[in-house]
Image 1 (cartoon, rainbow, N blue to C red):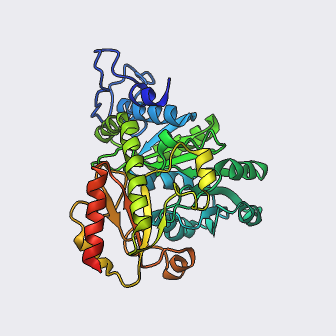
Image 2: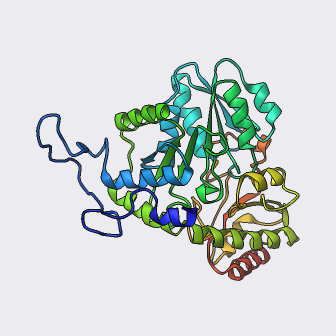
Length: 380
């Protein structure tokens, strides 16, 4: 089955008992048991729920993984992945990942002596050089948030396998419609399903997909033990959102290419980060390992442009946290998504105060360019 059909019919397709084409919402905390030790396959909804099972099977199908898990947020999924490790373990982390990922490792898991090292994972030699005996995983985003750095998943996974460490890939920006890290060698794939998978800015959710049974058993134990599960209604909303992923991503990609070209040619913009440009570092890798370039664009305004006036001048594009919704969202990483990253680290990796991140929605692309054009003029 091709992915466009799998998005609609993957996982558990409808309801066999009634013929309903939509998976029912099993809004229950517990289940009637026939006798001691005998049940219908469900006993308590933290451990398992039919609606959550449906969306977990769906993401496993889409990522071509062994087993999927749905969590209450992307960070809950990331935290579950980090719980696979123990005191003294070290994780190599892409150096410009989402600020929330950095924060939970730096401020929470570091307290349990789970250590990390920020590494430019787009440089394979730097990845090789950073592996020591205590390294147990390489955690990458590709493209990264917000500088759109590209990491070769296949090559990093090969290095990881040789050193008997796990490869974890945050695939939020690409989604399984554009990129499948497990097919490229990754062990674990993570999504903030809040973003493109949900697609409508109306839910918070996270996914974790593993490539084998042993990891599946370990993650399920963590999910059940710590309880950061996705509730039945949001599971259903997520299934509904995923059904339109292909048509939305096609439009997102088309619009992003159009907007990126406008920004590149605009004299008020200093620099544009967009993997679709042939001059973007890692463009050829992105072209090889993914079926598109995504809809996130980061750019730096000229020094004399007042960014506060720029944001105020936008009438269609929304200033706000998050990304991946049908509406275009714009943010200022240094004070919003990456505020938890220390200033010196932000400066070192390129998250400067003038950097802006744009999540291109599915509105009319000419309207989006007109809105940006007017805001830039207003900010001069």
